[in-house]
Length: 479
Image (tube, rainbow, N blue to C red; front, side, top):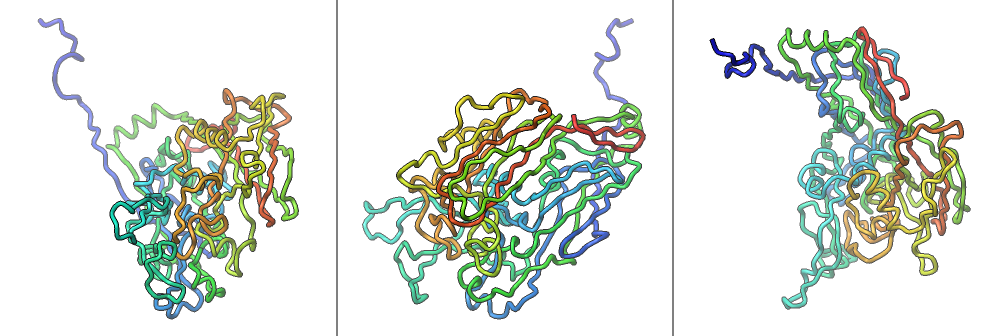
């Protein structure tokens, strides 16, 4: 008789691990132009890459737009995320995850998408198109004179040349790049947002929906029209009364439910009757800086008392009706309401426009306040594990890397309507993921030479939470 254990013998394993995927297309149970709710079927495991599908429909006069070169579109950095203000995922009455000002946080996350992915995929699926490529002076006649003129948005289309009268012109400073026609909102394109972008913890967790006794809801609160769209010069000048509403016909939640054979699912449920998982929540604190506060220093408590906090994410945004037309926030800019600006540069103190530090558990994060923009950029890199895909001029407004050409009538190296100093973000990672004492986290900041308009400072604290699924009911608490 052979002494080889059965586990070492070559043969078939007596189990069926065949996986099947069922796709459900859910209509909202509640819908308006400001709010939408979906009920998820309690079946299988929720696939984290399921999609929310949205479209916009014009409610104003859009006659003759294309002939007159009048186009509305989504902000370049955030795409269809511009319409979303708040996201909530609930199990019964328990809020699993809630994110305020989700569109602004999504704009921050969008910086870390590779240029190739933006160009080949995101501009068609989500509307995000901050993909940078080199520009060359293609109007010269001598080969030796060909040279780079800077970096610009690249979407796979060539430049068109226009003179002041609208006629074709080969002057490189008058050349303009446009979006694909299918991306103009008057064409009613349909966009999508991944469920794991709406609820970031789903990137690492697939919820076992079949084990829930309570109904699961996804609730989306929409932004007002003034934050949803941007326009080229002709549209902004001539169509101030046009609004874009959420198209109720196209609003869907497309969910993939992953299932296995019944005996496998039952065995997994029996082995995980008390299921728990950790995840991160983003808690927002925001406050205003008046237009008169061009040079301002402040200390503000960001909360976090008694919680485990990983990092802070910071940005400075222009407020409504500043540097805009009646169409709303940033209608005349490339990034709309979702540019996070750097104070204006000058020759006096070019690297000390933003000074930052945080204090928690009676200690400062940095022994010396961070003043150098390169250090701010490095802090983002260390916090996220990868650098944002932006140039130095896009981040701080210094250097001369951006092209002087135009994208949808907006000059790319402009600091108000373009990309110059409009993608400046900060991320401060706390040491050792500490539990914060009763004093909370204090943010020390100084802004110098701000533009003379109203601004809002937004700060998200990434806090740790734990969810427990016991007897089909989920409870969520801070770690």
